[in-house]
Image 1: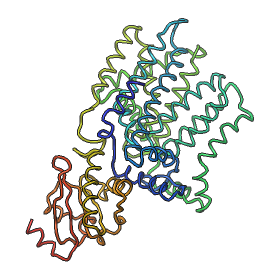
Image 2 (image 1 turned 180 degrees about the horizontal axis):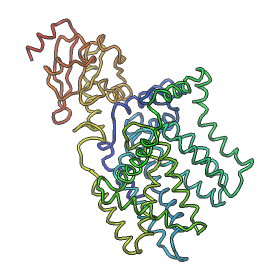
Image 3 (image 1 turned 180 degrees about the vertical axis):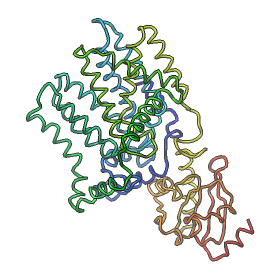
Length: 492
């Protein structure tokens, strides 16, 4: 966990993500807090279907603690990431102690679990998701909790708190991403095969599930099940489909993708070692042997998720497999330790950990998925320059960004609105502003020629470059007026 803490919090403000999606979400949380009015809806997906609001409620206390500083969300995600590493150690320790030949008093299972947790802590995709605020990146924490409780339930050692976890996890994760629906299937399978019948204790599961889903369900009741209709319309749109051959290819691709992204890092040899080791470890297990149920549980979790996600036909993204993060790591570790002699297994696994650690870039000059040279500090600096100019000049203003696809500059809008208490006009009112501030690499002439509506719709009469906020990145000011745009272009 110390390793996880260092790797996640090192240069957090520079390495985290503060893009358009984060700007939209942070503004929604700010509005919720400023108006003291709870929301019943969460973020909207790229297909136009709304998620539940749990993500916003989880962000809210961190934004209050950090006084609306945008670093609040990355801190929350980093803390969840660190906690997940601890949970992976606990889960791996239970699995390895049950499955591997470990003598009483032998610390071998602890060492193996420690190495598995270290691999989880330094895997680049997992590390980046642990400090990049996006609701699917919370799924690994809840998944690992779910697996620990499922292991206890299957083993007949559960308590009421395990049922609480089983209730919380599906209700939470489905509000982070709809591709978390296989967790509902897995939770049902775990309960069906429990050695103890929950009986009336099922209330410990149902109550937290109902509480977490209540705001979402209340919105549905108030709006004639609007989201349900959205989901059915999407399912009928053709983006979700089934063809036996294509589906099998998708399952194989997703399996390779999972091990490659989390362990192989593009190295086909290491990915092959991980896949073969995990498969061999599962095949080698003897039915009804000590711990066999636990390994079958992990394998079932992987299969259920892969089969479910494979119905989605679009190109694979890292967050689609977020529920598989802990399982892929533990299956790889178990397979290697089970396949190779103990000393050789340790050497092989440590070598993989060192290889993967070297794939992280802790010195880059931009946030994850952000343009070159752009970090949270860059956004804050640009917003401060714009705020100073607004306070000096007064009037209404808009802000735009040409560095990436977030033309409407939501991160800058968030900092200006929440930190500097200066609210730009709405995103549909660019032509009405007195000034337009543009964060870009292009000179004034190129910005005047830009065909994007946010720039083209503004009636510009003057162009000024205010400041350089990062090497090659500037804040440029358009002043509203009636000048001929072509004439201004000729002057630049």
